[in-house]
Image (cartoon, rainbow, N blue to C red):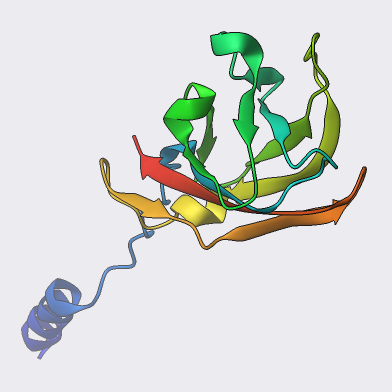
Length: 158
């Protein structure tokens, strides 16, 4: 009988589920880039805005005359602004793309019109190399005149 209990105990131990800790989700780094900006209505009474983006403490464009001219109805892509970007991880953090209206002849950092933001959750679930264009974010308000822009950001797992 003892032998039978020993065999049963051993066989139960072999088939009993073993508790294993689930692996922690690793932080996935993602590059966030300006995909596009569409000018619904510009900020200046002359019908033309000179724009820059402030991202991670850096102003874009850095060279190319330091601004991008836009009129109502214009669309510009990231390359027009020298591809502003930053890196976040899927486990946290955020990056803000602050749209700035600059005044010539010295563009400087200009006046903040508003921001488009990406958060770590935007890159959750992406595999390396996979990208996602985030839903359009609207930047609007009143400075010299009423303005409205549509900004799209692209997130890519790296």
